[in-house]
Image (tube, rainbow, N blue to C red):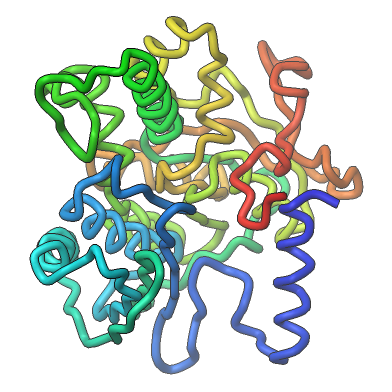
Length: 354
């Protein structure tokens, strides 16, 4: 059994133990109230302090939670932050973290409503976000229907490519035995952050992701909640499989239509790596992935909600009985063997690896 399968079974058990009907989407939809979601970031699992500065970590801790609200087509209102602080995180470091967190929250009109502090062996961040439902409806993972367009916002693979760049740079520095003359975030060479450079674009997407709140809100406005939606925290492949399973449908994805930035393409060529592997399995792009009827997709395209354009990458089909191969890949309109021919959650981020 793969890690992703173990996680799914564990979540199913928790739903059984708690008898909860709210578990299963990016947020819980509370009747008569709104949206609520919680997320954890743990040092050594989700971030490394030698690779990131605390201002950027604060921004990301806020943004990834706001992205859950975006994935339901809602708007955030309040957040709580609970932290476990190791001895090496003092008041000065904590202030830097909160500067980044409140900067992100303020840009999306979200207020900090409290939290908790405790001691720990490593830095741990637990955030709860609360938000409003759109009056037109809510987007769930289970809303995909045969004939729907499969769409995405923005581009994919940037964050995963950035992580590979960081890892490769760290290895090269270790091999050389000499630190660079100037450093950027953590122990990274400042040259990687040169404004306008491909590396800077990738690192910005990784360290300071943008929650697609305006996009999610506009999608719900145009569709009235008819369709499905999710954010790509664990990769495009994970999103597609999750939506297909929740909706009991299949998908056919045109690999040539998946939007990939020029920076990902450049580094992929340099490393002789398939850029689509970053897109489907890199994770942490925090773009939106969803489905809707073709007529509604045309309507949303006319709205042009913000700087994250929507791209059609495939269609929903009725072959839910084929299990793991529910999300098939196509090239030139024909079945493709690239990346194994179908989306496989074994290649996505493993929360319970080992």
